Length: 72
Image 1 (spheres, helix red, strand yellow):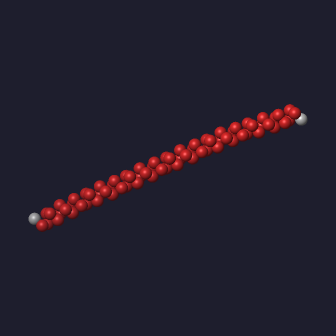
Image 2: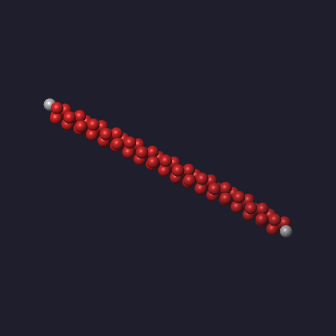
Image 3: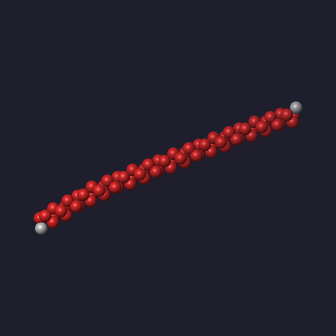
């Protein structure tokens, strides 16, 4: 009975450690995935905003030049 109890306790301890390690790994992977997704989204948004601003500036310059040429 003592051997069985010891085995049970040992198994319980091993399972607890394994579960804790697995949970830690899952949390780490989840956090990494969230960070990667956030970074990607931020970069995409920044790029989109930059492109939009650049396009707007180019169009404004073209309109200004066209208007200047028409009025000359």
